[in-house]
Length: 343
Ligand code: ADP
Ligand code: BMX
Ligand code: MG
Ligand code: CA
Ligand code: ZN
Image (cartoon, rainbow, N blue to C red; front, side):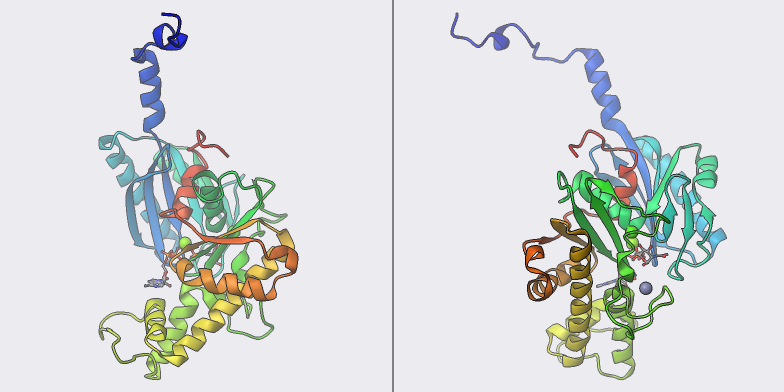
């Protein structure tokens, strides 16, 4: 039958031979442990080769060095135990942390008071010694950028930046497809872009940083201030006496017509937007990826500030929100897995 395509009849056997099946199985089960240390939370996850989070653990991030190191090792050990039953082979540990990080050495060089007792801390040696696994470390915003590059909106994009909002504001810059670390590992500390000489105090010791206006902690500070002055609650707002006041309450109050809450949020949006315009004028990325707890809230106002205040040539830059579940955790894992993904 000469019309039949040749390969269908002769070339590839329909069932893979057992060696290639074994290789596929080994590749599919390769996994990473990832750790993310933020101003509020300590998260650990088992992440498989394709970048899916198989299991996740979360605890409040302890305030002292000793307790934090102990908890990291404890949570990782528990995860390693669970990984066996989940058919995941752990290849190593990726750590994402706030602070300036030297990734070649696996050392946190310096931290703001958002993570206390976290300056000149070698993470690689003690974690590697305790778990008998290789360890990679980078800044959390930088990790978030790596995750976007490997698994998210940054796939195939040569120049982009990401801003991740949590307790603080983290940043990552991909320039010519590479992460920018700078001369003293302090590049892409985008939360500390200053948009006013005065402005609120920042956890870094300065004032007027975008983190001091628009981070989860900044909005929580303003929500508490309004609450203390009895100016937060509005008609129709559900707020229990026992629950802590958060940024979420501030957003709810503004939506329900609280003009004080609305003014605070407008300032936060403008500060963040102006900060991002400054970034556009320095590195000229083609894409800005917002992630973290407040990203969907900030997207439209940030786009608006860009339209109003960026130079004409920076107007076409796209602003998107991340579709990744946990960019910092995934990025930490991506330092050792996911190499099958197109870059
Ligand atoms: P981190 O990495 O800094 O530990 P996360 O990304 O885990 O932080 O986010 C926790 C932070 O998110 C809290 O510190 C708080 O400021 C903020 N947050 C918590 N709940 C809400 C909410 N409902 N809406 C907006 N922000 C929130
Ligand atoms: C702070 C700073 C950054 C970090 C950012 C986001 C420290 C300890 N942290 O600006 O390095 O990227 O917070 O951190 O110096 P998060 O706590 O919001 O996740
Ligand atoms: Mg974080
Ligand atoms: Ca960073
Ligand atoms: Zn600052």
